[in-house]
Structure formats: C-alpha cells, structure tokens
Amino acid sequence: MAKEPVAKKPAPKKKTDETSELVHQIGHSLLQDVEYEDGAWQAIVLIVELEEGYASVGGFRYDAKGKHTATIPENYDLAGDAEALCDIMEAEGGGRWKSMLIELTQPGPEIAIEFEYDIAGRWSFDFSDADKMAKKLRPKTA
Image 1 (cartoon, one colour):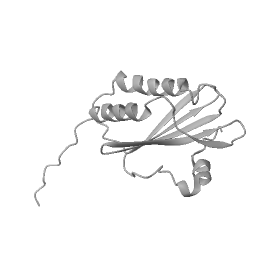
Image 2 (cartoon, rainbow, N blue to C red):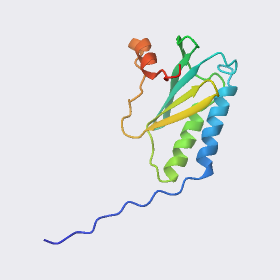
Image 3 (cartoon, rainbow, N blue to C red):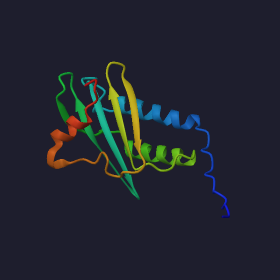
C-alpha cells in the first residue's frame, strides 16, 4: 500500500501586539461609552455576530443585585472594531470567527473575550425569552 503525502497546515503566524492593542481598545472604549461610564453595573455581556457584510451587537447589563437590562453601546462602533479584530486574527492564522462574547466585570473592571469559530448562532439572541438568555449569559461574578 502506497502512502500518500499528508498536506501540512501552515503554522499560525505569531500573534502581534496589534491584537492585544485592539482588545484593550475595545475594553477601554466600552468603559468610556455613555451607556457604561457611570460604573453602576456589576457586569456587561455583549455579543457581536459577524456575517458577510453584516454585524449585529446586543447584550445585557447586570447590576449588583443581578438584575439585568438589555443594552448596546450608545456611541461606540463596537461592530467596526470587532470586524477589524476578526481581520487581524485571520491574518495571524487564526481563521475568521463567527461571533464574539465580551464580558466586562467589576471589580476591576476586567475584560474577557471568547470567540466562536464554528457555531454561528451559539450566542444568538432569543428575543422570545430574553430573561432566559440573560441568565444563561450572566457571568459568575454578577
């Protein structure tokens, strides 16, 4: 039996400071947004979904008692920076992600970002039951 050569995947390019800088910029810009600058929140969870030529942003703001309200940034173009981040990550060899989950938590504040590369609707909003969605997404610290 003849062995066929196995195609090797190219090694991912080394991550640059550009990714880290843009993640920092996203967190900083969210904290400066008029929707969140008052600091009267325990956690903020935002979802960005990217599709060909389209981006959607939505999420929840949690107070110290765990009560949630739907939210989006008021004066910050999160979708634009998310698209730029996706492009940079793809250029670094990471592929294009379909959605991004951002968690900002207090005290700190601290930022955590998770990316979904395979399941497009993993964090899609279910507007028929926003309370269930908010509970599912609530960070453990909120």
